[in-house]
Length: 525
Image (cartoon, rainbow, N blue to C red; front, side, top):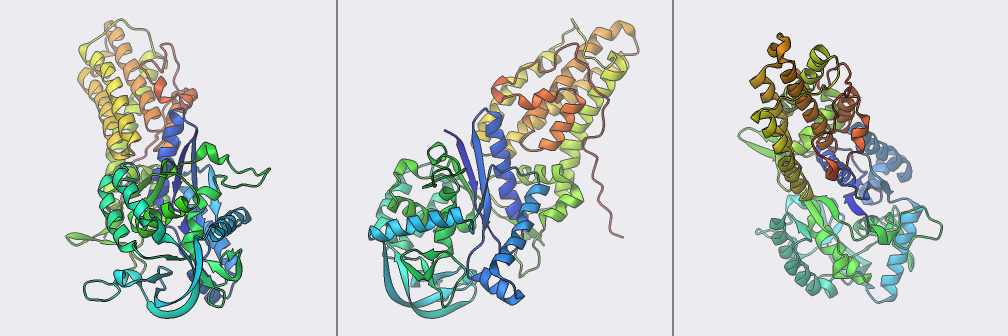
């Protein structure tokens, strides 16, 4: 069995923003972490390329929709490369393998009576590409701004019998503590289930209105509703119903998904209502349902409060520009350090700089520089034998098991920011050790050499341990640290092998080079 992580695939009628970046970096950090634990972890992400908005934008630009999505897809792959996101599987919904899987599922559901055709007159949201019911009206009897332009339509379409599975879904959500994380999001799902009663899901669009989509195998005059198509990527690219000889993964080894990482805006109805009901109709058991890890939004500070990022307000932040300005390490660290998984946070470039400068440049970077410089200067560049011990040295060693245990507990619960708390404290304790003993002063007297050897061996060890614990978050920086330690094999260290003594006595280290150059913000004139 593998540890299977997916993210929501990004709609290509747009460009990456910081919310997309956070989701992908969080997934990448957790994927790297589970691999470091020795698990066979697999991360799938990708792009959603069909839909009416894509067709309309392509028509406005005078290009074929396929040409348009190929161009916009590059914006996303470029962004994830800049952020150091390493995925194991890549989903593009225009891939013929995905199309075949979607059509197989549609045909099976149609044959079993789960899909039917009917005429429907009602209101349609252009933005969300879905039909609305009276339950979507607000207290004033209006469709709120979240639906964008709403128009009345009267047309024939195909429907999925969502209502057949609502009672099952209610019972499943009420009794299952791991379906939605964090748990406080369960109330949102239960409320949405109430609104879904007696409502079936329109899963088609007539070709006279929309041609850019996957054709229904039982009626080629219709294409598939984008959500019904897009959600299936989680299983199609995991090898569900794959053809013989396909190089896709073995589905039984990946499914059920340990984590679908999604934003709170797509929790309901798509991922917590449509998706489990689709899986149930396809024959998936309760035990085969995925876990939804729901993250909050990155907002923008505005006066004394904050506001949501949106294109209409012109406050969307481009993650590629931030990487170019602050660097990959700073961006990755900030994105998982300054937000608690499941909660909202306000983007603040001053906090980004502060966290990088204080916790990485001044703390870990300074420790690495001091450890290697003093080892070069006072120990011939080699960690030396010693007999000296002190209660402060023993306390540092004794703190390691608790640091690792806390780290693992928080990471297993997807709380990366809390996991980092303990690592930073561990690094700080090593810097405090230097300040307490002042080996640079002790080294002036040859009689203190044993003390110097002991102190420097300890702080070199802390640098090595920190490079292992932080590698899922800032892999590039940790590899540079391990190169300076001349301990590249640390990259192979599993967490259950993390113990005091990673750097043996008699080990030669290299000359330090700045790993975290301080970021200086230009002051406005």
